[in-house]
Amino acid sequence: MKLLNLFLLTFSVTCAAMAQKAKPAQNALPNIIYIYADDLGYGELGCYGQQKIKTPNLDRLAKEGIRFTQHYTGTPVCAPARAMLMTGKHAGHSAIRGNFELGTFRDDEERGQMPLPASELTVAELLKQKGYATALTGKWGMGMNNTEGTPSRQGFDYYYGYLDQKQAHNLYPSHLWENDRWDTLAQPWQDVHRKLDPATATDADFDTFKGKEYAPIKMTEKALAFIDRSKGGPFFLYMPYTIPHVSLQAPDEYVKKYIGQFDEKPYYGEKGYASTKYPLSTYAAMVTFLDDQVGIILDKLKALGLDGNTIVMFSSDNGTTFNGGVNPQFFNSVAGLRGLKMDVYEGGIREPFIARWPGKIKPGRVTDHISAQFDLLATLADLTGQPAPPSDGISFLPELLGQTNKQQKHPYLYFEYPEKGGQIAIRMGDWKGVKTDLRKNPGSPWQLFNLQTDRSETTDLAAKHPDILKKFDEIVKKEHQEPANPAWQFVLPVIAASNN
Image (cartoon, rainbow, N blue to C red; front, side, top):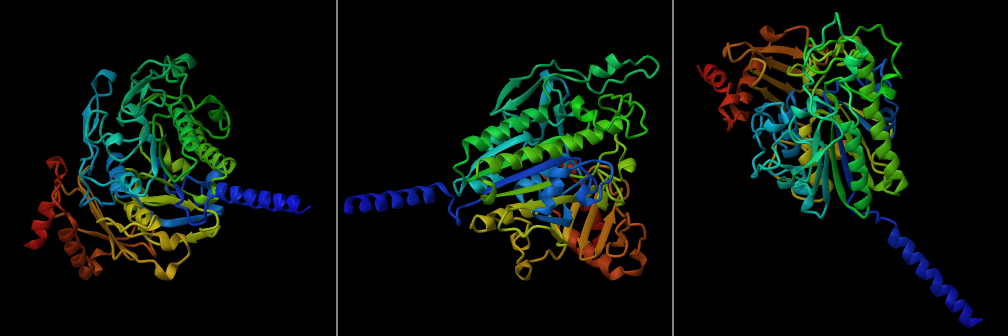
C-alpha cells in the first residue's frame, strides 16, 4: 500500500509539473499581432458607426478590448505611413515621406519604392532583441528583394506578399514574394488600369479582372502557417493587408452577399484601377472579407491556446481613397470628417485603432487618448521590458492596461506631407492647424480648427488666435529635418518665411 501511495504521489506531482510546463507562464512575453488595413476609413467598421458594411469580427474585437477614437497615422498615404509605423518617427524625421515610385507596373520592370535605409531600427528588429520570431504577411512598399529595404534585412525572419505597391493595385497578381523569392501564382500579369467601353462591355469583360488566386487569401494562409510553427512563442506577426485599397476585387461569394442591397451602376475604370459591375457591393465585400480574416486569426489563436497571451491590434494606414470606383460619401467612410486619403485633414489621418489582450485589457473600453502609429515602437519596447529607442513616439501601454494616471501625453502631434501640393498639420490638444498648397505658395496661411467643437474642420479660427499660430510656427521649425530625398523638400521656404 505504501508503494502504491508513493507511486500515486509521484505520478500526481509529475503530471502537475507537465501541465505547468505546457501552460504559458503568466509573465511570459506576449505574442503580438498587428493587422493593418489599406485605405480603410475611420467610419467603415460597425464599432465606429458604419451602417451598411458588416464587420462582426472587428466589432467583437472592440467589445473584447479597447477602441481608440483619436488615433492617427503618421501621414495620409501608403509607403511613408508604413515607414513611420515601423520606425517610430513622424513625418518631419522619417527616412521615407512620400510614395517615391521606381520602375513601372510591368512584371519585368518591377522596382518598388524608395528603400528603407538599413540604418533604421524597425519594430521587428526591436522585438528580435527579446527573442521574438518575426513575420510579415502583406504589403511592404519600402524596398525590393535586392535592396537594403527588403523585409529580410529589416528584422523579419519570414515574409510573404507584395514588395511593390504598384503590383498591389491588382489583387489577382501574377506573383508575390516569399523570403526574397518570386512566387508565381495561377494567373498571368494584366493591366488592371485599362478601361472598358460602357457601350460594349459584357459580363465576360468584367470577369477578365478576376483570377484564380486571391492575394489576401494567400496572406492569411501564410500567417496561419507562421502562427503554427511559432506557437511556442514569443512571436510578432505584422499583417498589412492590401484591402480595401483599389482595385475593387473580391471573391464572388463575398460580393453576392451585398448585390441587391445598393442602387449601383457599373464602374468602367474611368478613374483608374479595375472595372467592376458592382462597385458598391465589391467595396463592401472587401471590407467584410478583411473582417473575416481577423476572425480566422482569432479562432486560430483560441484553437492553439494562445488567446490569453497574445495582444492583437488593428488599424489602417490612411483614410479612404477617392478613385478607382470607391464612393466614400455613400458609405460615410470617414464618419463625417473632412478630407480623404492624401489629405492632412482628419479624414485622411485619423484612423480606427482597436487592441485586444484578454486578462490584460479590460473589455469594452473606449478611450479619447490622442496617439499615433509612430507610438508603436515605444509601446512595444515598454511591453517587452526594453529601454525605449530614440523615436517620436510615446508608449500607450498604460492606456491599454487602464493605468490612465500613468499615461504620458503628447504635447502635440506633427504631420507633414510633400505630395498633393505640400501640406503640414499639427494637433495640439483640441487645436488643429493645417497648411496646404505650400509648394506653390510657401506663405500659405494657417487654418485653425477646434476639434472639440468642430471635428469636421469647417470653421477657421486662425484670425482669432495669433498666439496659437505662433506656437505652430515654432513647432514646424523644431520638428522638420531636411529629407534625404530632395523631392520631399517643401518646408524650408515655410520656415524661412516665418523667420522674417
